[in-house]
Length: 242
Image 1 (cartoon, rainbow, N blue to C red):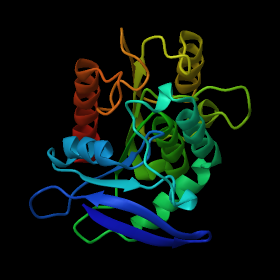
Image 2 (image 1 turned 180 degrees about the vertical axis):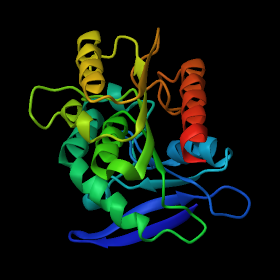
Image 3 (image 1 turned 45 degrees about the vertical axis):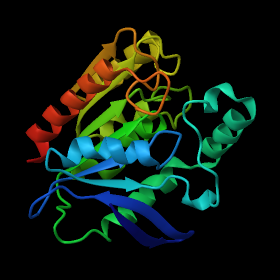
């Protein structure tokens, strides 16, 4: 793992770069963390992609809030004080800044990483960010994977689904069954927006899986659903980024 930094108006953006074995140039996937931020579980998840030959850039969503104590993912949602601390950090994090940080960190990549035909993947809040990043980057992002993404459909004009027309990427949306942040009603609205924008996408509902199913340090981790989401991501990236 290589630590990356880049100057942005607010200070120094931070991120992690994971490289596959072998000589480059390696295709790049931008991986956007869930609410727990960058931690060993995210590095483990990056290994799914590096094993397949992809470089993985993981921008830090919380560097503006340093210093902060890491969360215990197995207990954070059952501990009222820790849950409140986590939600406060999520609330203070601005996705637009996270995307701008990512753009700056791309400029710090070593030459063995390709910067054309990017992929993006994210989980939970990172899944929402992957959707918005793909819209913001336009033709530069060829594929995006949103895994148990929350908040893709909302009432305001800033709702991600209203950015569908800006997407050039092919999408894979892995939805947790019974996820209150991506209900069947949300899914219908999202499908309508993507269809109207003529976006190529695949929306898969993982029956019996809970929100957070793909993240290995969460109590709700579902190995079968997680593997299915990785298989779909790998197939999409292999088809679009190679």
